[in-house]
Length: 151
Image 1: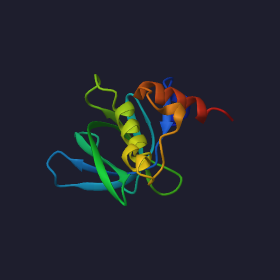
Image 2 (image 1 turned 90 degrees about the vertical axis):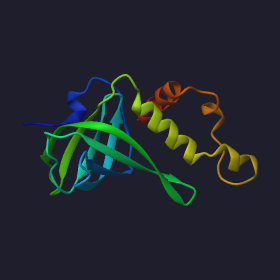
Image 3 (image 1 turned 180 degrees about the vertical axis):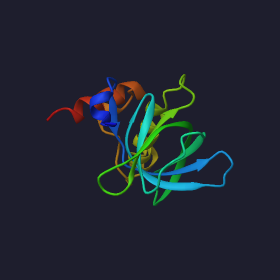
C-alpha cells in the first residue's frame, strides 16, 4: 500500500516540525513523535512505534514559547500507521472536530509564539513581519503556502 501523502492529497498542506505526544483516551499509553505536515483535515507524524487504529487519541503539539514550550492539543482519529524507510512509522491522524480549522489555529498560534508582539514593542524578540500583521489565520496560511511553493 503506497502511503505517499504528497500524491494522494488534493488539499493544501503545510510543513510543520514540532514534537507531538500521542496519548490514548485511557491515558495509559503515550508515544512521542514529530510532526511532518499539517492540513485542514489532519496531521502527519513520524513515530518510533506503530499506533493502534481502533482508538481515539489526543495529540499534544509542543509549541516553542519564551525559552520553554506550550502545548496545543487536538482530539484525533488515526488513519494509518505504516513502516517507513528509516525504521520508524508514518502515522496519519484526522482532526475529530471537522468544523474547526485546527491547521489555521495551530499555525496562527505558532506564528504568534515565534513573533511575540509584546516583546517586539519593548525591544525584545522579533516583530511579526509587516506583511503578516493584521492578516487572518486563513490569509497567513495562504501566504505561507505561496512562499513554500516559490521554488
